Length: 321
Image (tube, rainbow, N blue to C red; front, side, top):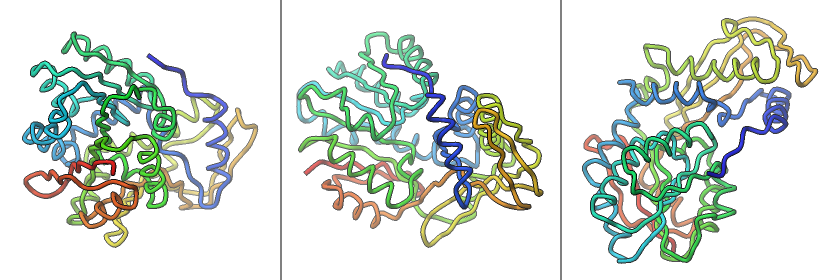
């Protein structure tokens, strides 16, 4: 397993740059330490967080159709997953491929080393014959390095609406990396959260149990712990918003009062005005028309859209042209 710990210097630098910017920001990728990983697993099980449930429904009910294109090529292939997480949904595909005795290798990629270790252990117990080669990396770096590339066909998984965690320009940049990181004929399966009732979307990021709030607050606790800071979590509130025009759901941590936060590792203090915000995360929702435009602009063609029964979510199969 190609694993490493989060680089202290990079974390510190990103926090410094984000809190010195106007408006203040913190990168959402740092949500995912060991505690953050577990909190996100709890979020995925929440009744309000429909995304996981709907994508699970798609994969459970339509996995044979989804995999028909790659299996129809009749040769071994690589199953590469960007942002593998705990692999709960992916295991639907993996079990089917293992049970049908398909020759393939699974390359789960994630920024979090701890979640990759847990995934590798669980797969070893559940599917001991599965070839697994974890890679700890970012989306961009993994697509640049292509450690899986061996001349075989590739099916790249980018599930869970992960592309929605980027603004429009960044999403196009990721798609460009996908274009560069794939060869003609390769397939990509992407998860997209679709535009729907705005209240349904807001509820998914503002659950009654407060788990999403804890997930956001854990970022402040991580900075306290790893960078010797003195954030008082009770002096901040978690505040999500949704714009039905852009489809962007944004999460903020809002200072409840004027305050100063000192980060020892940076030897710097940061002033907050009352109700000044820190932007932490974006989750963009798409229409099927927008998804089609994104595909063509990146050098892909849409093979098929797989939707859940309510049309809340789509797993879209693209092919590199």
